[in-house]
Length: 192
Image 1: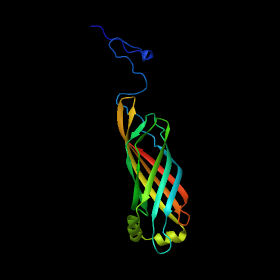
Image 2: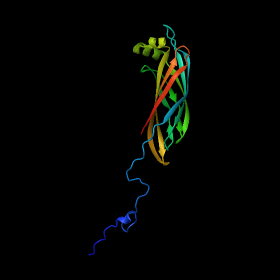
Image 3: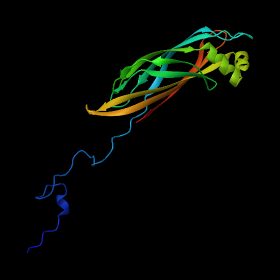
Image 4: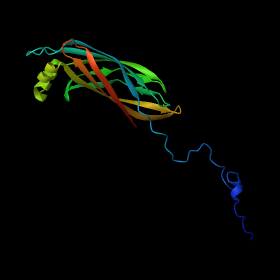
């Protein structure tokens, strides 16, 4: 019985009888696609309307209209349903709003408009529980935090659906006397 010839190292990648063709594209079997990159949220405008605490009595009717641009750096569009936003003052929930359903295109951006209302009863309870309201009124500014978790799906290669959750935390500092936004910033994260 004749011996099989030793494989020639110079013929690497050349199809030999009885061997499968070499794989192309650099992907190995079982390799995972690159993880999604975090979306970038940019607050375009925040408008606060209403009356903030003045003196000893608390009269409160504040509505925030947030207009944000969400940039999707990923090669797949992000489709999401309606989601709730929690509005916090010093860590206590004082109101909320809703994010409308929509689509953020692949490697594109979308404009989101959200109304968030401070609920007076919850605000008074939170202010009594956490303290610091009087200090904020004396300082002339109040800081609110809006937390939003938006569950959705991305479609890869036209048929692979993956669940994704986009999370955004925005801090907004509002002037007490003029009800104007003084500072704002957002931090974002996406999870598969």
